[in-house]
Amino acid sequence: MQDMEQAIRERAYHLWNEAGQPEGQAESFWLSAQRELLAESLTQIASVKTGAPKAKAAAKKASSSRKRKAA
Image (cartoon, rainbow, N blue to C red; front, top):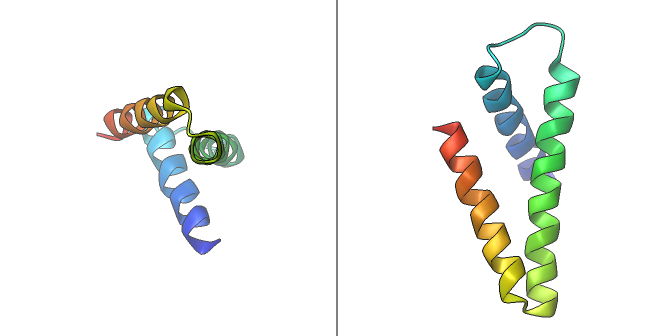
């Protein structure tokens, strides 16, 4: 649980930075980061349960896209 909270915090920080560090929108950035990470987690879980190659490819694409945005 702590790891997920830290991941959300870091992603929200990156989103905030990319948006030019606006004030008063912390909750919005937190929720956006949470949504991204939970969607990615669900995609990974679905690919494990079904063994679906499309789901694996989508998860990999989302992960690499997020890394590029953070850089």
